[in-house]
Length: 387
Image (cartoon, rainbow, N blue to C red; front, side):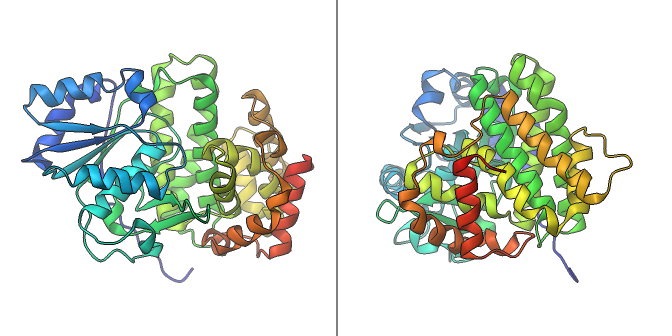
């Protein structure tokens, strides 16, 4: 690349117990009322308790919209927007995983813009600034608290619509590892591998810069060093904190580089089959890596080393193969399926999956030139479990 830009307006606070200081953090951003956006699982698990207690301590009025669904749809955004319009909110607080944060971003857009959220598909299509947003992630995976994008499923076409704009950057991200302690191991694994996918695809992206790559490869190493302990121990606060930070910096990386074929394809799985995004990414990742290896073996060698593989004395291609092996081993350790058939993907929808994958801007950032037939082959290989 001859030139590149770096822009990161989101302020980040990270530390154990910071959710109990939410009111203090939010005071500079609100004078009227806060809308908390979350999902039923977060509310049922009482994860909101320290957040609500702190808002009450600082006399910050708030309401809660808790109907966020996995793979958020335009229908949910419409419902939440109608909820928003019933009162005078001047700040949105997202508490939850990527679906909650993405839904909150979409609501923030619709607070000051007309029509449907789907009208703003693409890059820089939002005319008016969004309502200010603060994000408190409860999973270490999506990195949405650090990005200028949201993804919303069109309920009519089942296409996952990507919307990108600087207006979508949260003003503040609060990373509190205590909020991730109640995650079941399966969610820890899926979201952690989602973050790894972000880091790897950002590092190998055609649009990567020295800045984004430095964030991306560091995130790869942090995930390699911490995800196993977060999964198998669960209560280890240091690994939980490090995974939140790794997810955040992977988000910074791909905000500046885009992603690649894993996300181009996995978004179709979420839209058509409603498969959780993290598990779709994790299962697809080895197959896309195998496809991309010839295009950038030196970068794959870096990834293998960051994941702890011994690459001394190996050629770039041999060392790059170690990166694929490392990901396969991680998926196996975390009980993630080794094929997409077990996720519920049906090849009956293959033409639609190919069309929707090629529609994604991430294909253009993928390191290896990709055709319709390439997408077809990747999906078929992943279905059959052949790397």
